[in-house]
Image 1: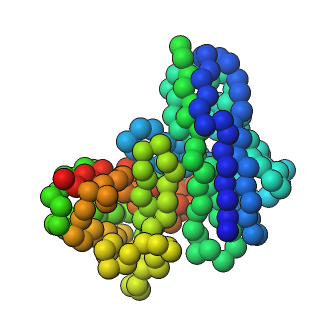
Image 2 (image 1 turned 120 degrees about the vertical axis):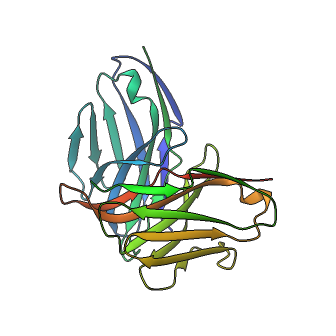
Length: 111
Length: 118
């Protein structure tokens, strides 16, 4: 059974204070690791997909990296508008595109 | 591109009644759609996967007779919660697998529907 563990559960940063969110996973045949952003009362917004260890992707202040056991979402010089819950999900082989999600990290960036 | 809509965004119904939630892919065709539910401060739990024109595949523990899913076209899937009870109150989110303007095939999520059963 695929498992995803995200840490920390919550993170408070000051504006401009860079940090990283962790996503550890156990999956049989990784077919993709996904990062989403979710604002309160909204559906998840797609950020990145990573497919193989060593892969990195960037978007504005966010950078996602992947190893064989975990992924990091690095946030550089965050702004208050980056405050949200960040969800990590994995897809395994033969899963009909089923995603298994972690519980998320609630990020709060104070001005 | 790759926009998914849901209707209604919130609904309140009485215990014992049924409620239908619509999920539409607005600018792409989705052969596969997914229904999730999310409890407060919890992650998304997949309920079922539906492929256009065929029966939905339900996850273990999800009652298929209670949560009826219809995927009649490449842009529309519906979830009907039958004989709703207060424990069915939750945030229901659909997603559709499609291609964005940049050509990337991924799952794109709708904005969610907040169901409250009184």
